[in-house]
Every structure is written in structure tokens, then in C-alpha cells.
Length: 127
View 1 (spheres, one colour):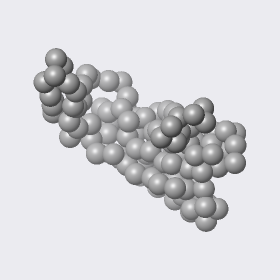
View 2 (cartoon, one colour; view 1 turned 90 degrees about the vertical axis):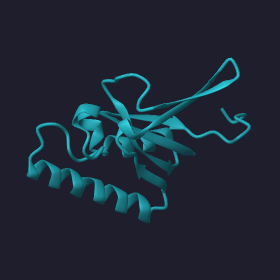
View 3 (cartoon, one colour; view 1 turned 60 degrees about the vertical axis):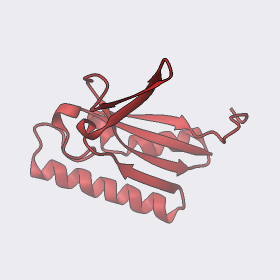
């Protein structure tokens, strides 16, 4: 089953969503980068990794919505937040437990949070 692992982190310390929390030291950055590279290598070799990407700083976002038939596009995040969506992985794993195992190994699971959501087909009937 496919899951998206949504990586949330602190927007005030945004430099890179997984490696550079506030108060960063070089050794911590190197350790997090190595752990993340190892995880990516393992899930790539196992065929579990479908896609992964970091997202740009929230200040670069545009929010689009309709109100009364009019299109509203607003630059920047909708509201200030204590965390923001910093990146994601899509994995195809055998069980929900395996998705949790992968998410737990992401550096953001230590000082941010990783949300795990099943990916539905377009019909949504499998849920």
C-alpha cells in the first residue's frame, strides 16, 4: 500500500526541512544527513521509495481559493504557524507498521513531526 509521509518542521528555523533545526551544530547536521542518506538508499534499493521532495520556504507559497465565484490568490502562507509542511516521501510498503518504521527514521521525527497518510486511488473506494 502507498503512504505519503508528510514532514512538518519549525518555519522559524527553516533552512532545510530535515537537517538544520534551530541551534544547529555541524556534527548534528552531518549525523542527520548521513541517517537520511542511509534511509533513502535502503528504501530506494528495496523499491519502497516512490517519490521524495523537500518544499521551498513557506514564504514562497501562494494560496489559491474561490470566494463567491472570484479567484483569490494570496502570496505567502495563509497564517503564521508553529510548523509547516517541509517535504514529503511517497512509499509503497507492505503494511502500516512498515510506514511507521520508515517515518520514525526520518530526522524530522525527532524535533518536528511526520504525518503518515494512506494514498487513495482516484475513486477513493479502497478506504
